[in-house]
Amino acid sequence: MTRRVLYLIACAAGPTQFVDEGVRQAVARGWDTCLVLTPSAARWWEPRLGELEKLTGHRVRSQYKLPSETDALPKADVMLVAPMSCTTLNKWGAGISDTLAIGLPSEAVHMGVPVLAMPYFNRAQGAQPAVARSIADLRAQGVVYLDGPGGYDSHPPKNGDPRSFPWHLALDAVGAVVGPAS
Image (cartoon, rainbow, N blue to C red; front, side, top):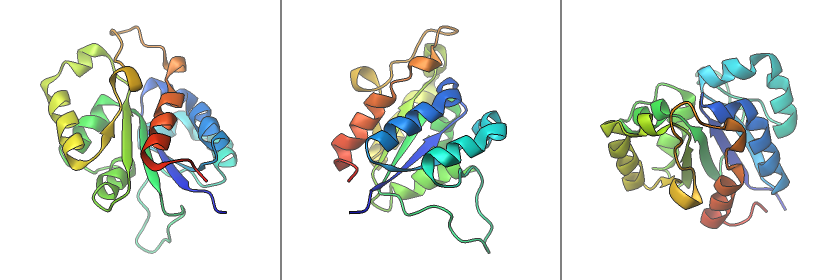
């Protein structure tokens, strides 16, 4: 029996410092986990990308491939964008796919691949009018946006704890949407 493929797509939001924990939890649940980082998030892990590649068994991607290159990752069965920054949310909601981390889920949701997103930003950022519009636009496209009790509630400015990001809730939601990994 082959394992199902989860793309975990992480942005330059605080919990991405600990994305290895999210990967470990996904792998422990049986997911063949592929990690995609925004370019800024990849810089945070640059000296230690090999650790993440060992955990996933795949190359960590952060850039679009060249036309002459073959795909380095297997086809996704489901995508989870987590933690998702306010910047990524608003770019994605506006249809701006200037990074691989936005381009993949932006296209996948219109190709029948289930896509979930769990944010991580503070209440002041969340109060920007573009945020509500972007959330509504993503939900209208079929993206499962994980906020509130089953997701992430934004924190007060300067009071977020990136170590307590609820990876388990995000992965529970993935399981609820597409079933178990194997």
